[in-house]
Image (tube, rainbow, N blue to C red; front, side, top):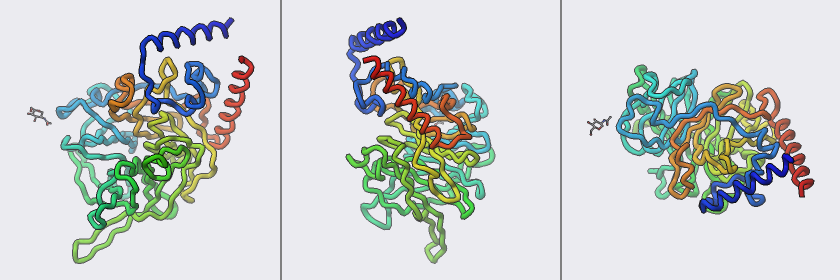
Length: 384
Ligand SMILES: *[C@@H]1O[C@H](CO)[C@@H](O)[C@H](O)[C@H]1NC(C)=O
């Protein structure tokens, strides 16, 4: 009875979707959808329902700030949490978005720090507590010392006490050569360990590459660097020197990687994918600069009523606490489906799903997810 109702419902939805002639963007299809013809039934599956985040609250950036500095466009690329406050960067502005955890409409506490300015191409933001500075990441900049070579850059900035402006202290390159100008670092995390401070840089493409290789899922890369500075007759300089490359475990089977967030207490490193509209969580041992295991669960941002991706532009993520995350969305591209527009350029609060347990190993959660998948496949086979 229930089954026939579900089938009737699926047929009805399939019919109404078809009659709308909605073009399907192949890039807006999640990995579990790619295996076979996608349908709403996928989202009924036990594994997906137990692993899908829940929206708590969300707001377009255009609603957060009292003074919008004449813009309603916010191409958010990263967000970080410092002492209970949030700081976001935008591709299309030099301002840093500052807001508190109430995420209220036109909250007088919320602010755009610094003049709006021009396109910044900021892709990441991290905070260094020892110096009270923020690190702002440029995906790829032409290296003045090496013509035709592109490297990620980090601006070290200090935000004024009154939150009206910030001062750029220095610009340091990450001495890592990129193969493609538009496939550089998408995210940075500043990590304090027993052996000093490190900067983790997440590559957007698989193998840290662009082109078709960059699209081979399961080959994410994190480049770990250490800060060096020197003085000489030319005024000195600074650089982030790569010391180690860490492979994101292949269980993070994503077409691209847009941001990561680390929680020191739980040792959980969340890795976000824009194209897959999902996040993977692994146990990362800061003092060893390595993952404790290759296994980790994948969680999905909520899908629409047809099981399609609706958070199409998830570019930034930060932990709020052990059970909740904040995600920032970029502007939808014209090549993406129109339904991506309503949730773009926004900040979203999600609670982690039923399967999540911050006090359990990621390997254990991945095992539960694998068992759920097996049960789902058995159920699907029995229905045929
Ligand atoms: C916004 O635009 C108005 C009119 O051009 C201008 O007077 C004002 O200074 C602008 N504000 C900012 C913050 O750019």
